[in-house]
Image (cartoon, rainbow over all chains, first blue to last red):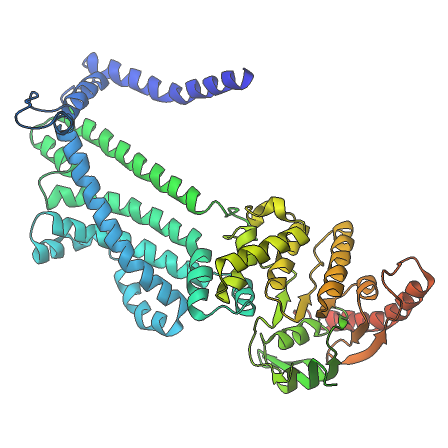
Length: 276
Length: 264
């Protein structure tokens, strides 16, 4: 009972600051202290967000199934488009970075071959690839996904290299004395020992991918959450801009929560900061 | 009869930053099959270096080590290694850790399950089979590490201060268990320790080593039947004798430390 009360109290506590800020915001906008064209009231934003979420057309059974209609709202389509790009870009980036990182971490010769190039390319922000990506791939999904691949690639690569290089020598020695072959050593010792690092890289990578997708959509494509808030600016729909930003935040939170769950599942053997 | 482990004229020189450290010099030691040998000495006397050379992790710069008639070139499952740091794979459950060596040997699932089951029972680990090493105490972890090498059926166990990090009760417990295993499976054991009492409690022969260069100072036979009583007169006489030998080396170690601020 007591813990239940404590829980309720801490939930209330968590809401205090946001609710207070919303109240101030509502007051400022609705009393004309701030021009509602510039800063619409939170209520107006919520209304717009709801409209943005709902299907545009009325339900017509001859055209589509009820489920398809349910998800035909602009917001959900945009969220899906953005998510699709993040997932594809992240998977391609990861699929390139992981094997290269494992090889570079494990083999000095390969590390020396690739490291100089990577050190030169890595500091270039993915955003700086925009002109080139449009030149190469035109408009649409390809340049956007290309940028996301770059955004996800480097964090995963660097962390995988570090992970393999930091594998505690004692595990290698133990495995060798148990008779492990090179392949077994790699797959069953080095790879799992490096997972905490690799997952940190994946988490940073997906975060970068999410930043890049919003920017890429503002430039290269005509749907997605990034495109939508830029489009709304052209019509002076500040309520829709804020509603879009709110949606971007929610999607980012969902991605991070998902990554965190995956992390906890894959690292249930891991003690955290301590190494042994 | 040929000794199971023949160490002859083994030397090891480390070169670091232009400095040469003679870790081992003129080591001659024959270990018979089924013998329990303790390597005893202060830290820096090269006892772990010698064990690692027998294990095949590092190669001597002089002399040869022959195990079962074959020179040691690399680590292998014929010489099971138990480390002070346990060296369990934290991403594998207790069961998986024990099974790992058998999976490498490509034994069948049924064989592995049977063997792992028997070892879990023998070392009282049944209730922990699905746990990860992080959830186990130090003593439990070392039991798993011992089970892991026993699974391989190696005739030789190499143990590098395996109980060094354990509290004294757990330590005694595991010493008894090790003796039980040693008797039952007739293993040859080389056991590194800096505890005089531990060496007397366990060994057939105690090899006392000198501090830099690491040489064999004396080999002491312990003929008292087991289980040995640490409060007995013989035990304590032996302890006194060994203490004198080890303390001489310890004081050379201390002098060396004060001369060299950046010693290992």
